[in-house]
Image 1 (cartoon, one colour):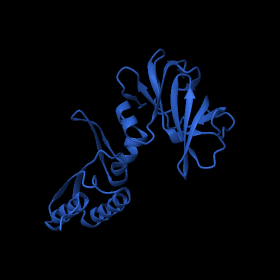
Image 2 (cartoon, one colour):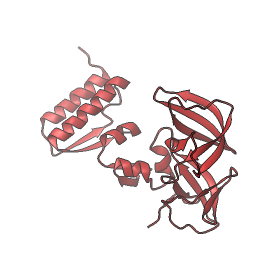
Image 3 (cartoon, one colour):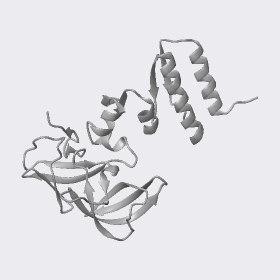
Image 4 (tube, helix red, strand yellow):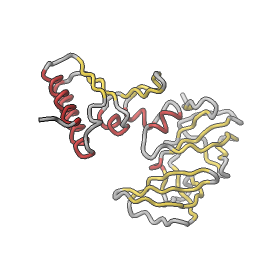
Length: 227
């Protein structure tokens, strides 16, 4: 009886496992599986890795697979490694704008601006302190301020760093709400907790987690981190 593509992939993995190799090479082994089975197989492969202790080199275009399964990730572009590190390193401290926007869904927001007097004067018309992760940055430098969608909060606390934005579209997912916001000419995606009291069409101020914000050189795209 003919096997489906997903079944053939699982049979191939089984054949590799019984040979007890020193290293496994997996090239998108879950690509032909449906969404539920893909999640189940991710868990099973992690269990196998924990039990066998064998090195696995795993190629995938699925960032969720990479983040959930890997102990180390190599992010590649045009045949070059852009960053190599733990999933947390890749996500929280991306090496450049390619890594920042490739890893994470929705992608990291990049807001253009210029450093002036210890602040980032954003092209959208507001200013925020230079992120603590960046250290000292020379005045006049053109930069992009990187903000993950989950670093926005609609309930603004006193003395918090804030941005005024317009709410355009809300996309409830169950545990979260994806909010498409407008800041000047820039579209900004925020990931808000379910139950957040936001409404399409309203103008409101959002708090920003500047402890995690990342600054990028506008010309090279490289992240700027303090020593």
